[in-house]
View 1 (cartoon, rainbow, N blue to C red):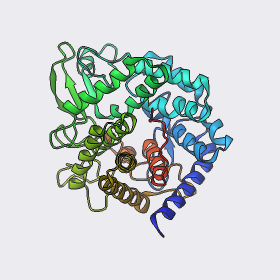
View 2 (tube, rainbow, N blue to C red):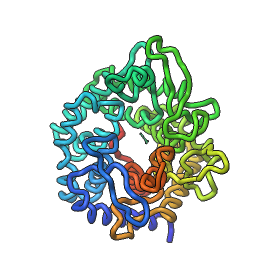
View 3 (cartoon, rainbow, N blue to C red):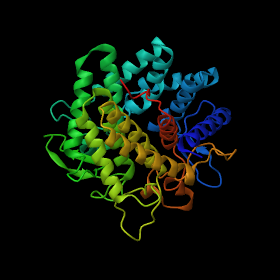
View 4 (cartoon, rainbow, N blue to C red):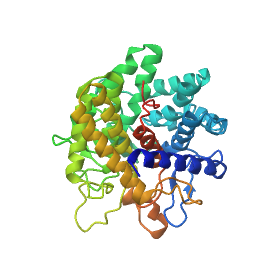
Length: 393
Ligand code: GLY
């Protein structure tokens, strides 16, 4: 079977899986899933940064099929996302993940004015977090009554934030309000300066002194160590800088994304499914993180398309081939779409390996992840030539 035929079959299977899981998921938003043999979701008590990824898959399904059931099911969560916007303590840098795949997706696909307003309110909330003196977007919120925590998080940026900048660039396009664009472009530069190392591996996070805004140093939360390289963080950067290249047309961003991938090629295992940290010492369990693979593959298809449009056929071919290789590796080893009872699309997701401390919490190292699923679906669509996604301005 040639690759295109494989991608078509993967897409058909994904659509069937989503369709049969609509009644199982109901109006909830998956947070994380158990691995074999259950392959079923856990849901947050009230809210989590992962709340948009199932909805995002429903909107992708709607964009392919035009079937009302996908649109209606996606919109059943509107009330929840209104509640997010109305709860200041829930508003952090993940507004981009949360609203690009819900409100912006709805507006782009249906022209719904209310959805546009919701997307713009989310973009305003994100822009308003920006520290204009330090020129960075703090990722997380300080816990009330915990000064030590505030001391750290008020000056902390994280590489994941590269996925939140598309919301700002979309808002700039909709409104022509310059500050949306300024914040997005400055955060991309700050990330380049502090989160991307000279060899094009990445830090998960970087701390500034919140009083002086002076740089303190690179840290990790979900990687193995401060100086290692968390594979999903590297993936957020590859996809994020490819998005910036696609939106702005500036090939400098494409070259950053390409160099981040070249570093991955030097460090990935032969099977082309990322281990959760690319610099994991020998002796540590090499859990896979298929979400890192899905995000990377999707970003690489986008990168190849950017180079193709810029008439750089050699780079386009190189990154297209890598994207296909990574996507097929996920399909061959981790695709769950032919298991009737599986509620997600991919096994082998590692959300936070160092949180695993008992057999009951094994899902942090080896489970299903709604974001892995969303980007897997996105990658399968990109593999077939689709280029209009919800990140794009
Ligand atoms: N944004 C958090 C994560 O990638 O797990």
